[in-house]
Length: 273
Image (cartoon, rainbow, N blue to C red; front, top):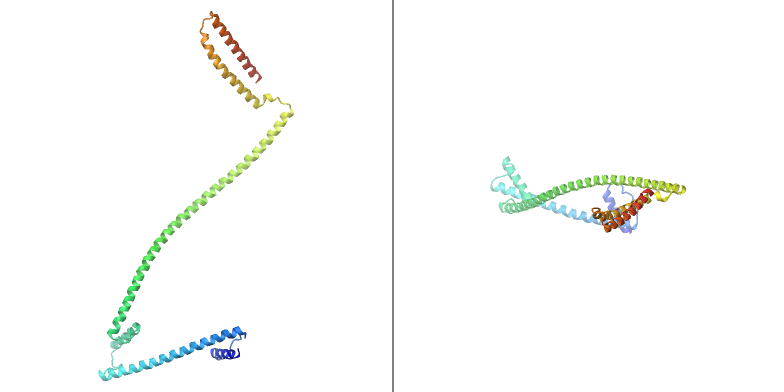
């Protein structure tokens, strides 16, 4: 652990430089974590140093190649960077920039054409992907429109249902109030009926003049009247007979007695009523 702690302290000192290292709790877990960070940092720094050295070497090579090409141009055709006109220098600069963007090794036509073809192919693929995305976007917009319409219809149905429920709730509440009123009224009438019956009992009221008895008596009177009707029909044929025949007279007398008996019963019932 002591070796790890020395390495951690050395690494922290290199990281913070002139600034003081912030205090931290020294324990096994903390030292292990900082030791791993130190190792990772040193590995990255080593890789970065190697990459920088590689870039420096390539820069030197490019500079040497540029100097060589300048010598070739100067000695072969008598051209130098200072002798080029501004348009020519601009064209060469644009050519170099295009070569760097395309990532070609030189500015020859055989290097530019494959790179341009590759970019053209990438462009076609991107356009194809864009058209596909546009179709998907239109389909999504269409579905979104249908969804919004459906949402509006559902919201309208919900509003109608809410209003209907409010109306039905008010009606139900009103019916409950009416039911409570009717129940209270029925209880009140029942109590009044019991009190009236108790008063009638206390006054020794004749049950024969109660409503129920009168209704029953009326039904009996109606039944007797219905019995008289066929007897009267039986007498009708004898009404036209001559009074001289003894047999007809007997039948008439019997019918009259039966009719008188029924009339007497009827009168008795009516008088009793």
